[in-house]
Image 1 (cartoon, one colour):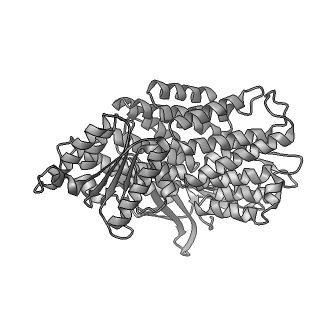
Image 2 (tube, helix red, strand yellow):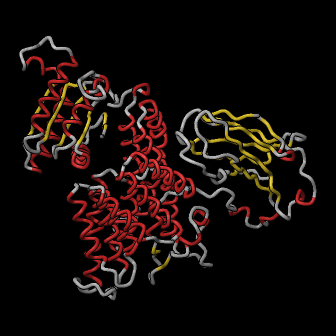
Image 3 (tube, helix red, strand yellow):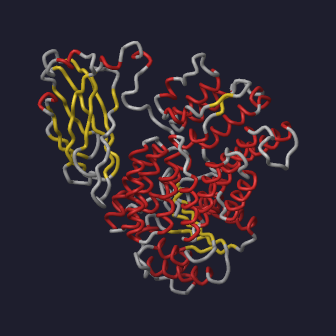
Length: 590
């Protein structure tokens, strides 16, 4: 399901419809919206050779000679008319004139009492495409209902789109609302998908342990409700976690692909096939050209342009990094290979732009510039332009790779601080350089947007031995936190061996705790020397931020301030001992 809301981009709407076969458009005046729906339908219908059928909810009673029908009866008429159309042959169906909010509230004879659900029910087993227009004409209005009656599946779709775009920050609030909506509805399947997307979001943000825990939970929940495609997606994401440390697991990716195929999920199988191919692309003798071509064909069958774009990106990257000695025939010398790589990079760029995926666009621009000097030198501001795209989605790690590409290898061979504090050493060890001084950036670097690791020494701290500092350690003492159940958190101040407190008792410091979200933390103050322990009680699922401030009460000096993020799941599927929440040090240190 997809809600687009206030939209003017015809190409983006067409891609959305072709990918998901369902588009809901609102937030525009009637005439503009209707014209826009007609244009989208005409574009798709002409390309696919399908007929177009148009319905208006407000006209349903008049066409049947019963102008006095209630909105619910009119909606029923539309659903039944669509059901008859859908079973005949594939087509493009436009249902316009749906009253504001009626996409979720108009009573019908459908199982869950919503017009949209009735349309989806009629549409689910067909190969047709469905456009729905809401009459909400307020400028900037959203097709989404209010928080009180939010559609959990629509929220999940929007969160997934943000992750696909490479902007996981925007997914968090949507996922929190989705979890609540599915809990209210008692939808265990929806909750499982919400936990899965939380895990995927954590993987994108480089929080490997949180991602691993949530994806394991999601996989078990999918199994419990018999959601085989979800189980396959969770297995694939768990396998991808290994790439962050450089330990590729092609066998696990191949198993995820088999699970998708057994579940009849062609799109999921295409993505798993791509990840498996990427994991093996640099192996000597691997037939990467054939596999990338097969993957591209799979994505074309399911009209997944984003998948096609990433396939072209990695195919071009492989071509650009080989010198013709890989045993793969079909091209001539280095010049021909470079020209073919250029064509693939350009194709990927066009698709990323159409799919509105700035993350993929920025990485493709960077690799294209590095592999094609002529292309780079045409634009003297190439680095600034790419950095700007990364900055637009808050990807500081991507900006750091652009800085590295501009600066070249360091004299001491060490990676710059902005990369070292974000990526595991094992991944950075795979960073290579060409004879021309261009970086061979690890493929896995583009799979995450990691934040700086807590406690990683900053450049100004390097002259100060680590052993001379005191650190704050947070430990979650109970199982996975769930809403409205207290979880204990222990706080310790741990002095290094060179710190004065290592040979003397800790002074009576004060640790002040603050919740930065919908949660309570008690007591407000603790004394680390006596074993400070706090009770954290969240009131909603999702990611919660806590702040701990360590002070010297004798002088009123703030010695250190740390923040921690704790993920709260809807319910505890079984015993589990999570890792300690990761503290985020402030500029001040004890």
